[in-house]
Length: 203
Figure: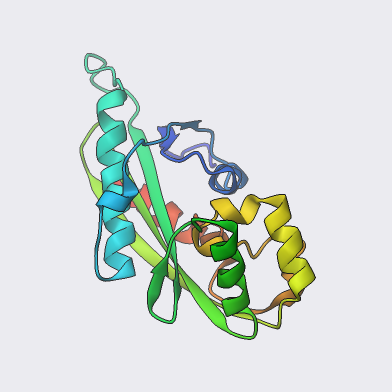
């Protein structure tokens, strides 16, 4: 960050390792807090509306737990970043697989086909109350994915915790990714360019 950049505290409202890594790669120092919300209780027709509503619900859950020094007056602003992501396959929203069988079916569907990730980023300035959010969509096209690769991924288990059972940066999956239309960091859960812009907008 440049020397003249406004100083601010940053909280990442997510326990995702991938998001932590992306934010650290962007050069930010931050603390993390995760929102304990019932994501299944929030339902929207459109995936874009769903991820925005979930990012807002996470922000609402975390904000009351953050203490901000009121008396300091000119204290540096504290920004909270909350995010959500779903995978969309043939128009249907996919969340984390509920079983190994479902994860297997998800991956078989992607083979020789494509899926999209829809990610939301919401940045809230906890001092001014200013809030900006947007969603980002990435299309991912796949070659055929061999059964033994799918077996290995399920055995290892990480895909069971990923939206839509989709982890394109995984070394086992990478060779079968034909094309990514959009940014890889967005697929991993935090679109860098969008996050940078929203941070600037709320400061």
